[in-house]
Amino acid sequence: MYHKQLDDFPKDFLWGASSAAYQIEGAAREDGKGPSIWDKYAHQAGNTFKGTTGDIAVDHYHRYKEDIKLMAKQGLKAYRFSVSWSRILPDGEGKVNQAGVNFYHHLIKELRKNEIEPVLTMYHWDLPLALQEKYQGWESKKTIAAFVNYAKLLFKEFGSEVKYWVTINEQNVFTSMGYRWGTHPPKKQNVKAMFLADHYVNLANALATIEFHQMVPTGKIGPSFGYGPVYPKTNNPEDVLAALNADDFNNNWWLDVYCRGKYPFFTKKQLENLGLMPEVTKKEQAILENPQAHPDFLGINYYHGGTVQENRLQKPAAKNKEKQFNQVDPYLMQPKGDQVKNPEVPMFNSVENDYVDKTKWGWEIDPTGLRIALRQVYEKYQLPIMITENGLGAKDIVQDGKVNDQYRINYLADHIMAMKEAISDRVDLIGYCAWSFTDLLSWLNGYSKRYGFVYIDQDDTQNGTLKRIPKKSYSWYQQIILTNGNKLSLLKHGE
Ligand code: BG6
Image (tube, rainbow, N blue to C red; front, side, top):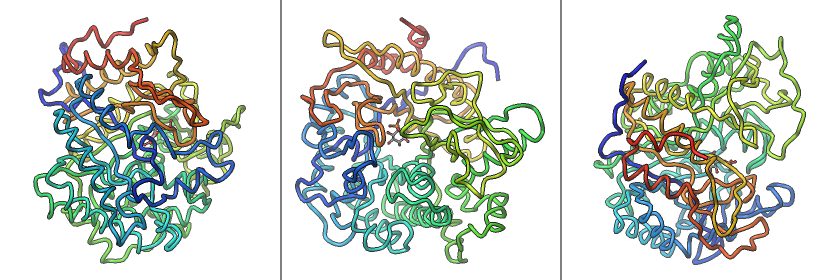
């Protein structure tokens, strides 16, 4: 689509920023919080970058007022955060920890006081450890029941205070990392278990959404999905077919279930042939297909897409020269080098995209991919979309007390421009929560890879003053919000 003039962002557009409990809160053992799978995993040698843990993180638990003050000063309209399940239910089920519940009441109250719309994520990967140890986590139906009870508790406590709810963050990423590559807890390399866990998370998501629609009729709920458009390497029909396959495996496999209650039939047949498809009972199918189980909006986390070529058995990808600590690309379901760990995915083969730049961590920088993503998702599911994550991970440096992150401004400006174009195309986009508000602990990159508008003096040995320093991008985003994203000069690259 071409537009002589681009449309304005909607008047009530939610300009926001995001975070996740484990990555910011700290206070890992305070006020009755129970351990999560990440609290254990990060303490086991060799699992995380330089052994970094979320014990202190950026101490948001104690400094949330200071952080919200900075949000208000920046003019944020929305703030996406996650609730730590084991902070409010230390064993994942059973006894409620009132101090934990109170923390989130205070946080939400403070946000409301500052006219910031809370966007509450119910699950951002930190499963209560007790559920993993008692039931094997997402491989058990008991965890589905525990999640639904947890959800009901959240709806009862916060249903009248929070309008926008995210059920599950990036199911596609945490199940792949946890069960395929073994780089996140529960550190398994078992694709059969992964597909089972996926099915159970789908049921948990559907059942919680049904409860929500009864308990919080005025609210809006949906999952946040890590979406990447898939490009064929060439116009060789085999490459085009490979891209169709990859899209079905990497995107439809989850989104079709969330929005239509049906597993896409091409991938399903492939998994059935390989004996990897979990059993879906009639009762479960009915739950997934219940219209009340479907989202009111879709959260899309966008970092990059991917390129594929024909069948990897015929054309294996070149081996990766440099093996990085976090060598797996979670958004492509394929490692960048060795591709032997997905026996069920011989139908496509990830390759480099020669047309886009990359970050230092090899993530493609592809703002047009965001416009494509928005178009594809909106056309398919016709639901309002909120970008719940998007941002640039970089090594930021403080010089003379300042952080000049012009590279981040350029990145964000291009992505905001892509959103403006998508809105002009006719996509119903309701908000943008950049990743992240403050710097935070990267699951596998410690503090070497930062995303925030606000720098935090914290290092990989947890020896920082925790001082907050707004970066150059903080003031730039303040202007974006002030002008509702419509001042085009702010979307141009600067020095
Ligand atoms: C998303 C997650 O996948 O990517 C976030 O939802 C995460 O929790 C973000 O921090 C960036 O990932 P990384 O590995 O660059 O820190």
